Length: 179
Image (cartoon, one colour):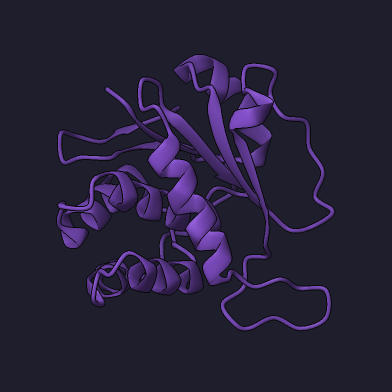
């Protein structure tokens, strides 16, 4: 089963190896340096320098923008899907779950937004997808508010310690925990 592994930064190497990932999306604030796991091909690694904020951004903070969402969509559409895609942010709770939803809809656009978000909540009681990424993704993917409404319907996730990776399937087959 191929899907999207969502991870905190601290577990990317372990999960990339365990799930055979060769492609990765990193959503981290500028200056949050890390080592790309050796199993991830440099040419198949997208890094997006963005803060986990829901407003336009001020000073050194970079808010998610349409350009960032388009990069996620393009990357997902070029993902070969023979192995899981690894998406991570600092804690694996906000930016990366939002990016996983966007990527899943980019590769499987005919699926129901509410069913996709319900799968997300089943595999991660902690996920609180970044609302700005979700809103931009909804608009960019022409979801007509369905993704935004679905994410709002699940509300804020439970408090997390940043150690709760999960796997989101791109289709309604099933979803399962990654750890």
